[in-house]
Image (cartoon, rainbow, N blue to C red; front, side, top):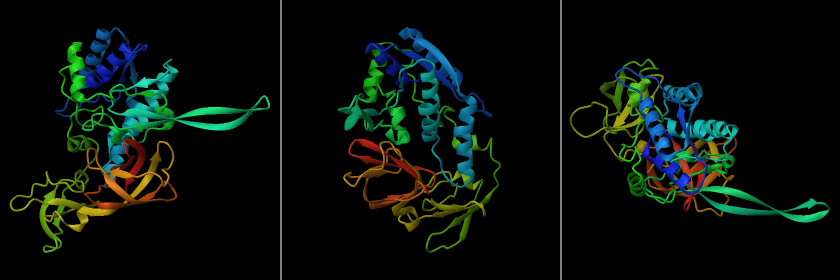
Length: 365
């Protein structure tokens, strides 16, 4: 329970369905930053109040050391390398559906549940012959699949694509069949303390902190050149930035280049500390129909040729039809698309779908 309305209603629904429920607050980050107060204590208190309202046990798991190592340090390394990571995806992979799951099971739980908008579907039956007491016997196993939520606008499978089959088999998503308005209505009907709480934004578990302000606490940066690479103005210096790490491909705002047409970031050179921009939204550097991926992860194994694949390169971005998927060695892949996609960003994830099923994905390089 994070102290938000979604996890509060998830706990409510589970209790109504007859589960023996315990609310767990994960204490992952408590550090205040200059002029930025970490909201952890308010979230903790809200989660505890809802647990009291529901009459369920409430516990705290302290994962601060692991979160710093697995999520924050990873995020800092990626930005230093010139990439744009997604800390929410890493938090789900390393903390929520690994460390939290393992700790909960050791603590006596049978399963975990979260307030994510996603669904566990499709129990696929596999039959095989085995010899038991010299007789052939059918042994049936279950394979769990992850599908998009009923509320397409709130669907969070993009952030969950690195979940494992083992974790999925031990996970419940009580909100998967509900829309956000329905969740809010349930919270208000049961007068939960979090019913009217605003949705949390920003870095996972850190709060509504501008990424620039957060990174400045850990990384020393220096000013550098902003260079216009538009066809008509090759290598023309048009401004100064305060650290190349803060800029991402396709970015428009925050460049502080006044007048005329808007500029878009097309690339950067970390060694030279240079940021490259263009005013041409159709610039070839902003568009591509090919994706190179690394660190591939499949929930149910590599997809076969029978799948009609689509891919999403950002949360809430449109699904693009995959023309060809080449799975290479060392967990790498190349993808050819039916149409060009804008602002492919190294460090972000490309997530594959077949119909409503989320199959897995990889990191853009």
